[in-house]
Length: 70
Image (cartoon, rainbow, N blue to C red; front, top):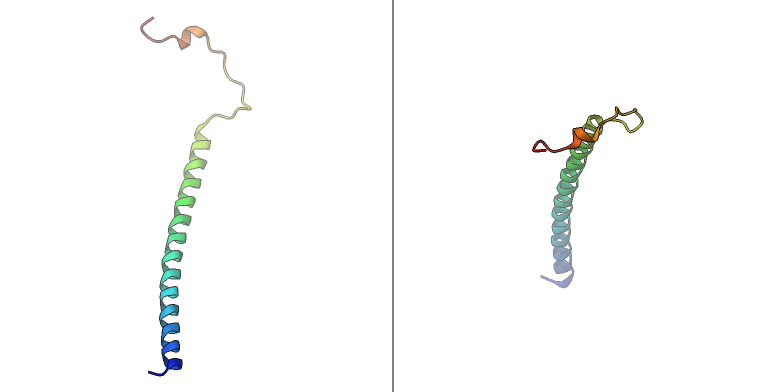
């Protein structure tokens, strides 16, 4: 092969590897976005379970806090 043909072949090989790398990176980004979405849903569910700080709390006696063995 003459040098221009070899250079063209080398460039095609590099482009092929770059496309493969981009496909792999895209798969990672998609997976991470799915994980982020799942974590956001889980966080929202947890926030729904926690009582609001704005709501008045009922008074609790310190006796209610004693361990059962006392």
